[in-house]
Image (cartoon, rainbow, N blue to C red):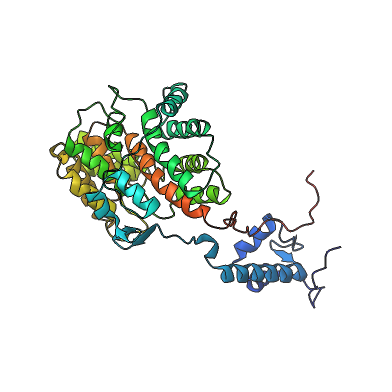
Length: 419
């Protein structure tokens, strides 16, 4: 039998709710929560409205809570901290391997930045290419999906198809993973269906992606802005999807599976799909000619205003600042830029929130005639490079190290089987 908990020195006297709460250091409401979870038993006061509690049970629960709190304090945030040399975020700025990320995105292509993250070497003019057989396999897999399938699902299917075409996918050596990475990203882009015409699948990735996002004619300025957006979004430290990728890599999932894991997490409205909400907000402001009624409707419905604020940046999101600067060079972007400024200014009357990268990305997608889902596609393609960088880093660590310990707060055993 398990060791019995020591009993109170006053076994005949039961505790009132107030006394139990004081001993546990909680509010009376929490005492009743312990009862509802089966961690304490109570007895109604004869002829009264209150409850009494066994002092031995209360003392035992108090000791358990103190042990768990001590363990949590000793552990701190250690299990939620991951050693990484990829991205540093500071107030108002962020860096890729020590280099200002906004400067990199302004002066270098997406592929150059991706390769910098992976190898810490800069290769000017580098492009990524994929075998046509792999791209065609991914296209066929995507073509079997329903027409309403969202972009992230398409990319996830393409990643799985690419994995089946690579018999060396389980080789986790650095060179093997780098080889897979340089073919996986162009496969993801090449597998997406074109909007109006079949784009050329060579040259910079932004050029290949453009025709899969919009039917509008491409020009060098617009392509440059899309390339900058991709570069800015390559990585952002341990966002939810990146953490998921590192967990998968810790279990030694191959790179295609790790990327697929990230795509699954990215699909949530609070992560990769957030720009779509901002896209629709800008469209509504352009239709009404004023942000005030649109903001009022959002708040009346109990929704937060998309595209504003970021918990890592008390001021302006540096990614938004850099992308807005590039968008200002596009005459076609001026109406959407004005709408975005109106949204920020209107909201700032009561809440000092700054624009984040989702709002800037929405300006790009609205200005270039892209659908609301286009921002999600840009985000997913861009972030794939960051996920690969984190997977490469995780493959050098001890396997299965990313397993946090659960702190059990349910009923204490033994407990009778439910009827």
